[in-house]
Length: 161
Image (tube, rainbow, N blue to C red; front, side, top):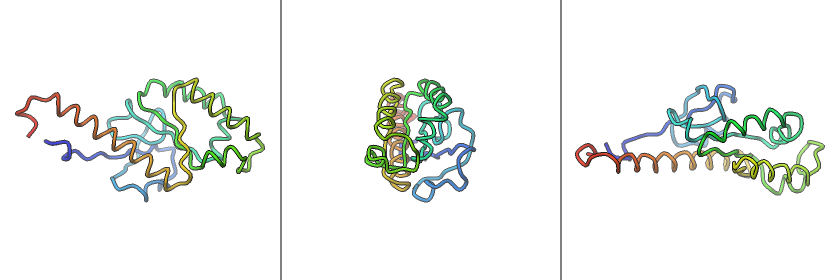
């Protein structure tokens, strides 16, 4: 088999909304399944790559009331080589306080920076649902293609065709 013969399937955690708000923006198949950490991954690859989805309201809740729980999740996520948090809002929304929470924008901004640096996990602000969905799919598909290429390169030449 060749790399292009393999088709990745996105796995959405059972605790996410059904239908998932990102699914209509994806070009590849998605299924619902259980993920120990994170919200979105690829079937069979959840120990290597995973994405945590956040709305701005979710993020602010994680920075305030649920900070201990979120910190534990980020600590678990450090075991996943490629883990990221995608936020359905912009950096500008965070910086300017364009949200309903009473959290001080500077405190929110600094908390995000601190969590990224402390846990080595990127927080990617992606403006809205559609861009977030497309970013997540691109990250997952690119990761998949790179790993299929590496596996294919390691196979004896006879098995590649």
